[in-house]
Length: 129
Image (cartoon, rainbow, N blue to C red; front, side, top):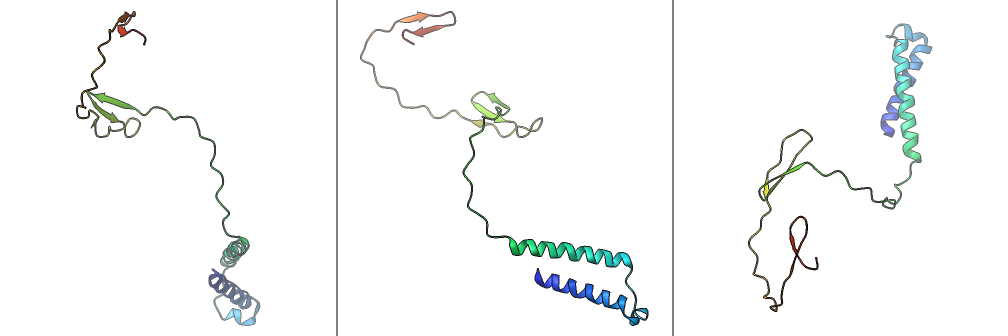
């Protein structure tokens, strides 16, 4: 960065000297808009170099913020035991993944107690649920 700044400054000084000396007539004189653009680049480069000189190392990471609310439920669909998610709103659906696993081991045999069923308006549930 410093070498670029030094080179730009040297070009700027050379252009300024050419404009202020009598030999400028014999040499191609830079147009005023070229000098203005060069001066603008010099100021921007000098400002960037100054910021870089005064900038210290990064500080420590801040504390994590509070957890936000849950996001919306992703669009999905079931095909039997397979689940599919939409890749983008109004877009294509991803690959369906069958979530049905292998049949598990049989459960433990109960002690042989009695079971009562309670009738609700929707279905029959074991008593005590």
